Image (cartoon, rainbow, N blue to C red; front, side, top):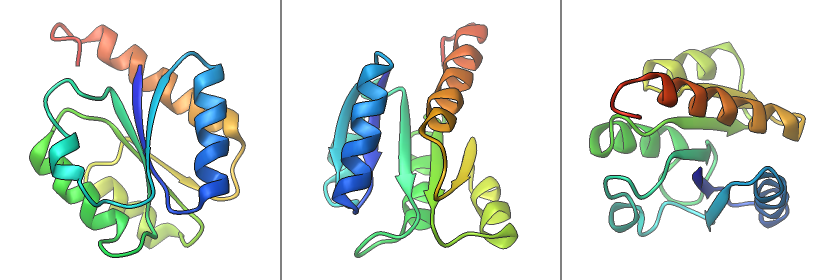
Length: 126
C-alpha cells in the first residue's frame, strides 16, 4: 500500500514511516496539510494517517476535505488530544479508524491491514 502520513511531530512522523516501511508499505510524509489538494489525485494513495493537531488547518478539517475530494480514500485519525467527543466527530467525518496517542505502532499496521483487507473484498478494489 502507498500511505500518506500527515503529522507535524518529526519524531512521530519518522517512527510511523519506519514502522510502515518495515511492514512493506510505501510512504509519503508531510508535516502539515499544505499542498494536499495537489497530492490527492485518484489512486495516488491507498490510505492516509492523519494527525488531528496540525499547524494551520487542523486534521478534522483535512479529514472533511479528504472525504469530499477522495471519498473512497481510507483515513486513520491519530491524536494526543482526544476523547469520546473527538472519536465521534472523527467517525462522523468518515475516519475508518481513530487512535489516541500514545498507541502501539502495531495498532497502525493492524488498522492498515484491515483497510487493505476491506478494499480487497470490494469489487472495485477500493
